[in-house]
Image (cartoon, rainbow, N blue to C red; front, side, top):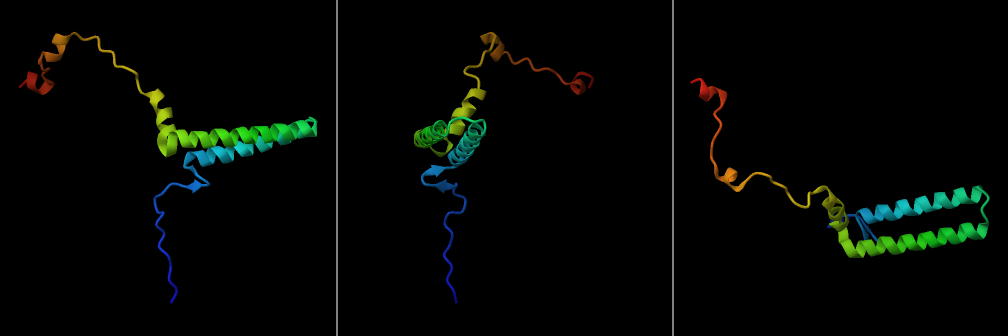
Length: 114
């Protein structure tokens, strides 16, 4: 009878060559976008050497930037950084201090007429 190994990576995020989670998708999308841009430049008649150097330069920058973001922010840090802009920096309250301690409860409609 064959023995099957147990998959201990259930629930773990996707990882490839050190890139985790969303950085893997940024990397793949960036390379695909770079390829399409180089192909458009080539079909537009730009010199081959310029297309090649632009493609290699942008690919190198993309690799550097994605790996540095992965190292700096980790698996969930970039999402936390993006979510931070949706929260207010501070809450403004124009109510005076006495208003917080005054316990005048409004009566419901049922309590008024009973």
